[in-house]
Figure 1 (cartoon, rainbow, N blue to C red):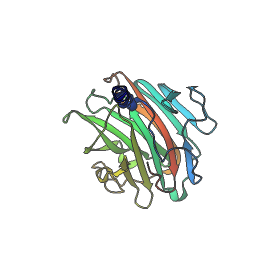
Figure 2 (cartoon, rainbow, N blue to C red; figure 1 turned 30 degrees about the horizontal axis):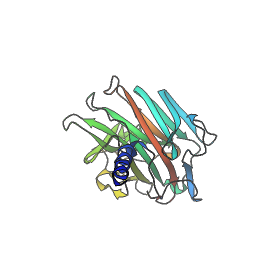
Figure 3 (tube, rainbow, N blue to C red; figure 1 turned 180 degrees about the vertical axis):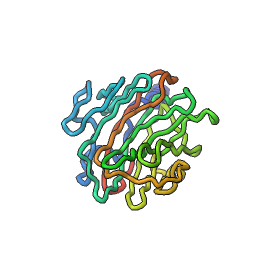
Figure 4 (cartoon, one colour; figure 1 turned 90 degrees about the vertical axis):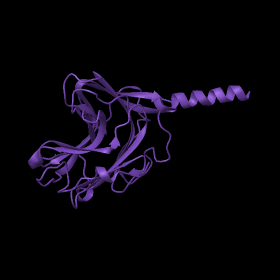
Length: 251
């Protein structure tokens, strides 16, 4: 009996990375949230909801059962995109917190400087804010997380950091804060603050032009790769427990 139990224990460890993550902070019962989606009430199959939209090109969104719950599978081909889109979003004072659980099958290893985005916030103003994304850095032969931006006076940039590697094939909980008081983005991974990833009005991607938030009205969560003919040629991301709030949500 002990041998069987031990074998079962090993099996559970082996399959757990592909299953939906267990957590005390999941679910959508909390009333103070600005937005929440845990996919539990949605049928399996092509993703659709009256509470959010879809933005795809060479990509799909599918609700799948994993382990004891449901998750959103994001699939793209090449430099495609597939996002769950929260429209008509309004954060008090233009500041908000976000939380997602994610598992990326693989990050790009080509071409050099391949750039990917998982969270993007836009609104009234030219700047596009990317609280979670990253880049394959050929000089280090690693994919690294980095906060980024595009449009407006700052142009395109990704403030990647060696201290924040993008880890594939493992569930992680990522949180961020968008603080309009100094246009600050702060990031936590698995509950641990990542101060190296913080960007502010004047500290962002080596760009001397001030970084200023738009008046947020849309948040997109999913995957986009910007360079053609990447390696690998397709990408799969599992997402769960998406939440936006006025206070830190926790993992």
